Length: 275
Image (cartoon, rainbow, N blue to C red; front, side):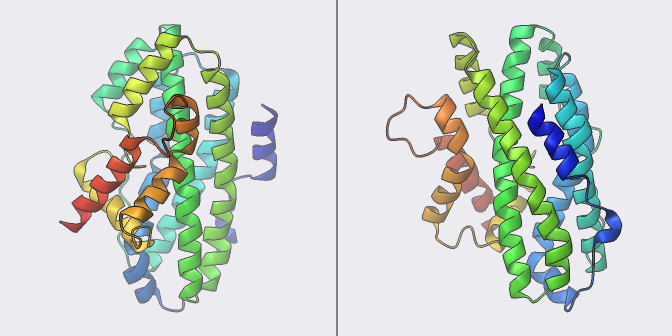
């Protein structure tokens, strides 16, 4: 709770009037990073649906979870999305059309079971693990985007939009990591088994809910040069985003550098984009 309070106090939502949208070459920016901006914008704006999903999956959440996602995380992410959407439209790209209210059948089904406290704990653990992977992906992506914009000499948008956004993501990552470690230590063996099973079957790259979006994420990795090292680059990326769940879920697997399903998902995204 102290961490969440500190996040809210030290990192309020980025003021929308603080951004400088001056671009030297908006056409070049759009050509180089248009797909990245479109993807990130959609994911950030879909926070509205994410909150609806959390209310469904966690009917009786710990107060600290509710405080985090309703009072801190959601307002921050929404401002990220609004800023990015404004940036991409000024660069000549289409306005984002996020899914803000349509919840999948799978989540509705899991939500129906979540009224059982033991199942809600499983849902919470999956939420934390998804949060860890999502935020680690965001940190890496915003760092690479910031670097790329500086290489294009787009100083204004890099320093007043991307840099402030990327400063807020590590606090989210830290929250999920703290929460995941705490809950995992309290779970029964059968709950841990179920989490491993569901995580392995449901893991997907951040923000991808269908084949088209998986292909778009493959394009994001290409544009940010994550794939430059071929499969070795993907393995390095998988190791970064899968580190926490490897530590918790698969600690008993000696010699494993990352969960195999993480790399499989990344490879699939790149394959879909390139074909």
